[in-house]
Amino acid sequence: MKRYQNINILLIEDEEYDVRRVINTLNLFEETLKVRDVVSNGNEALDLLQSDTNKYDIVIMDYQIAGSLKGEDLIKRIKLIEPLIQVVVITKHTINITDFDFANKLLEAGAFWYCTKYPGDIEEYIYQPTDFLISIFNAYEKRLLQSSSNESNKKLKQNISDILDRKRIIGVSEFVNKLFNKIDKLAASDVSVLITGASGTGKELVANNIHYRSERKFENFIPINCGGIPHDLIESELFGYEKGAFTGAASGKAGLFELANNGTIFLDEIAELPLSAQVKLLRVLQEGEIEKIGRTKKTKVNVRVIAATNKNLEEAVKNGNFREDLYYRLNVVPLMILPLKSRKEDIKVLIEHFLEFFSVDMGIETPKISDDAIQFLVNYEWPGNVRELKNMMQRLLFNLEGKITLEDVQANIGSRIRSAELEHSGILFDDDKMIPLREMEKLVRKKYFEFVRERSESDAEAAAKLGLAPSNFYRMSKEIGLK
Ligand SMILES: Nc1ncnc2c1ncn2[C@@H]1O[C@H](COP(=O)(O)OP(=O)(O)OP(=O)(O)O)[C@@H](O)[C@H]1O
Ligand SMILES: [Mg+2]
Image (cartoon, rainbow, N blue to C red; front, side, top):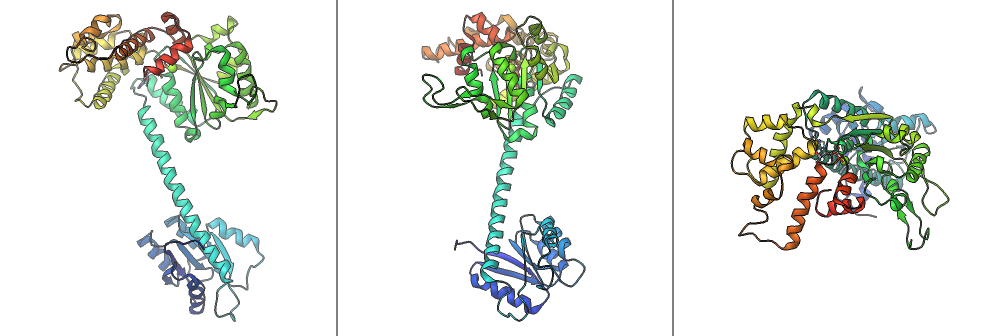
């Protein structure tokens, strides 16, 4: 028999004779099973439970006791006070021994188990002792399991609220307020969503919010940059392959759709998906099944799809670059994110938010920013939208000397951040802080990638400007910490 710590029991029984029989039966394991209290009616029991909800692990209760509070009502009240307490019911042997409805009602009320007492002429035990004791231990085991699952649920919930805190959408404009409502509605459903909007407006952020507020929140959210995977690898990345499916497939690989099973897949830059993969994607959306390369049997998956693009997909459909049927499948609910310049009320709160966010991160006091600087930023066009604003606030803090002035802001805006700024920022030409070439290259690369990306509609466009294959651009962005 497994060793337990004390198992604390409250006994509700109004007949002396049965109290003795129960205690006698439990005494076979008296070093573990501790009857802490014995009461003869329901109200007394509830008083005791309420005074210390942790005092008892298990309640053993007679079904027929004196007083008005008994039976199913009493079980429910006990479970209301402390759901973790396990209730074992004993009833007179004369009633209900083949009445499944009766048994069922007890279980529905929240009882763990019930048994009929031995006839009155059996003085020693209340019930077949080994059965009775095993049930008590099982009840205790259930309590432990429930308690640890409550603990891990609490932790999961905490993780989710931490994630949501980090992924908070900041804004006070009417547009953002409406967006909150839409996100709530979308989170409550399972429909496919197509998010459109210019680069840096927050499409991925919105997708995250939909997922982490939905029923799927404890499952994976898998973002995929469709423009970042080389065309010939897209299918194997999305759908996976079996061992031996092609030369070199020494072992099988799970596709991203499998990893996202029961969760959400975020197909970013969907317009970049090649036509061959579009066909396959359509099939997954229609049939909920994926075809792994090298496997004839299909695999069922349950994945919510959120897609995003900063391209005009309708145009792509007209030009024959995007399948119309797929477009309609993805675009069940369209969600358009406005560029920052069309919701200027958000600019000030975003500035304040990011200044505080990065200051805390850098362990410095949040600086003040002058009114004319804010005014200047509110009037600015923000071609790179919130991403540009976020990066700019980070840069400003980096070069900070006291309050942020209009001049600081002007020097940091748009195309004015050039190598001169790098020099003056002291990163590269600091007498006291010379760094290895490799690090210097990484810094410059990061700045330049940011610079180009802020001025591009998509990763693919930025890659083209840099003369890189999209997949290389994506990999390098990851390496320097931009993804
Ligand atoms: N309303 C907002 N509140 C707080 N942060 C935001 C907001 N909008 C965007 N951001 C931040 O700006 C950055 C860019 O957002 P995101 O990556 O979601 O944009 P995107 O629309 O997906 O851009 P792209 O088309 O270039 O992929 C992220 O760091 C994101 O957290
Ligand atoms: Mg994005």
